[in-house]
Length: 46
Image (cartoon, rainbow, N blue to C red; front, side, top):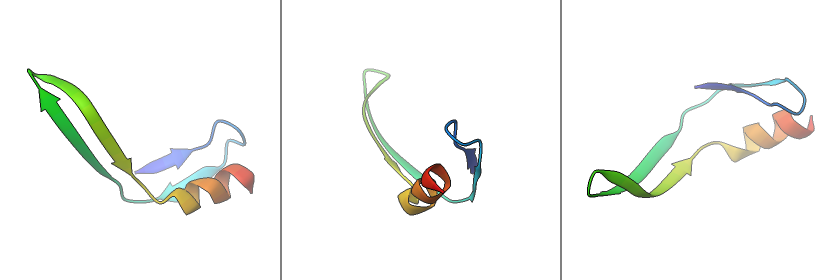
């Protein structure tokens, strides 16, 4: 995945992520998103 911040328009760069979801009756009721938050922070704050 490659993200771009809306604050600065700077690309975060390529990074991997994982998504863990709990589904009940065909609907997502809980989810956890795991990413490299340091890379996101660096792109956002420069």
